[in-house]
Image (cartoon, rainbow, N blue to C red; front, top):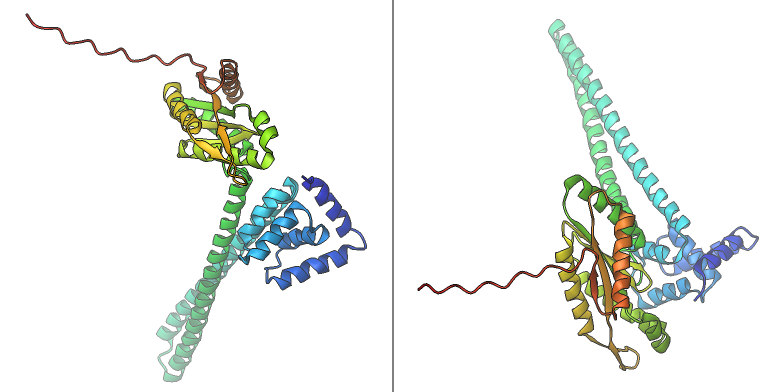
Length: 367
C-alpha cells in the first residue's frame, strides 16, 4: 500500500516546479473531458490523478469515471477525506466556512441597503405630505404625485432586488451548510467500517462524561476486540480481514441505535458508548452482540471458502461520580484483557458480575 502523505508531497513538489503548469493543464483537461466542476478541491484531486495514475486515489477516481456516475461535491469530499492529508482537509473546511461567512455578509449588506431605501422612501412620503398640505395648486400637486410615483418605483425595484438576492443567498448558504455537514460527517467516519472513528469517539466520550457529571445519569462504555484476528489475517489475507472487520462493524451498528455510539477504536478493536445506561444493561446488550457474531458463519467472497467462527471479547465499565474519561476507558480496557485471559469470546464487567434476580418463592399452602 502506498503512503498517501508521500504521494501528496511528491505532487506538491511537482506543482511548485517547472512541470507544475503542465500538470495543472493536464488536470484541467481531464476535468473538462469528464464535465466535472473545476473547484479547487477537484483540481487538486485530478492533479494527483494526472501525476500518479497508479496511486490508490487515482485508481479509485478511474473506477468512478468508468462507472459513469456523476462526480459530485460529496464524491470529491469523500476522496479528500480518504486520501489527502488532514491539513489539506482542514484547509477545505476553512475555505467552505469562509465562503459561508462571506455569503452571510452579503445578506447583511443587502438588508442594510433595503433599510436605507425604506428610510429614504419614508422621508419622501413625509415631505410630499407636507408639501401637499401647503400647495393646493394643480401643477404643484401633479409634480408631487410624480415625485411620489418615482419614489414608489424605486422602492419596489429595491425590494425586488433584495428579494432576489436573499433567495440566492439562502440557496447558497444552504448548499455551503450541507458541504460543511458532509465534511464533518466524513471527518468523523471511519472509511472502512462507516462507523464513527477514533476522533469522533474521543469527542463523544468527553461530552458524555461531562453530561453525566452534570445530570447524574448513568454512562457506560464497552471495548470490543476480534479474537485471534492477526492469525486470521495472516491465513486469509488483508482483504478478507477487512471483510471480517466490516461484518463485525455492521453488527455493532445494529446494536447501537442513537443515542449510543459505535466506533472503530483502532485496528480490529471497537467501542460502544452507552449514554444513560448502566453496566448491567450494557453487559446484556454486549453479550447479545457477542452471541450474534459467534453464531454467524462467514464465507470468503473471492472463493466462497468457509472462514469458520468469528468471535469477539469485550470489557465494559460504568462511569463513577467524578471519574475522568481516561479512567473510565482504562477500566473498560482492563476488563477486555480479563476476557482475553479467561479464554476469549467473553464479556467482562468491570463493576463485577451482574446480580441475578432470585427465583420467585412458591406460594405457601393455606391450611
